[in-house]
Image (cartoon, rainbow over all chains, first blue to last red; front, top):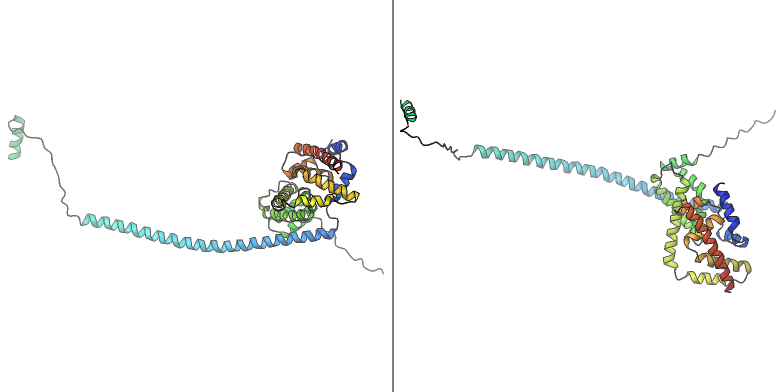
Length: 131
Length: 190
């Protein structure tokens, strides 16, 4: 049994009184005049066309803005790149100059252990160094 | 010598709904117009079952189709277009009902009372029926109209109103019982 038959069976059991059903149909009946539906369709399509036109306007405006936005973004990127390059070059130059112009003497510290001149090994060593 | 036959052009086969939907999704407004022609009566029936007047139903149908047009890119062609559209129509009608409730909350009882005073028998039944329908919940009224007046199936009603089929079925049962009870009470109270 398909749903439609099932529904019909339920209706036969519980359906409303005929006058009530008739009255309901009259209250809620859709207009029968085909011209009514033509007019309604025209009104709907008028609204749809207006919405489509508005959407097209927005799309073309957005396209224009996106083109301008891309150009502006390219200019900003180029500027940022130039600034970054300039900054990096300046820093490198400064580093070279700092190294080249530095006058601070390089200090060397040699740590030696104290020599025991009385020790026989050390005495021989000192003798060799001294001649 | 007989007059040459006038060759009548064969009528073009009506494009199927799916190709109309695909064309409308590509921005073909004429294809959308064809979809409007196909669905406007059923869309009206759904809206009329939810709102209380013909004018509101008409507004709901117009708003619903406009919503549908704007949401076309979100519609997946493997879905049933009718069910998708009916859901949009039901939502548009419910929106209108909510707006009217806020605006006309104080006016409704007067309207019903004036109908109730109609002396003719048929008009009396109509007035009682209107009164009783006004006391049903929005969903109960919608279900009873869609089923008993428009002949929608339970599944179709469920899909349009966003409720399970079983709920639509039991809503119909309760709505009929309530309506019968209300009509009896209204008759006895006169």
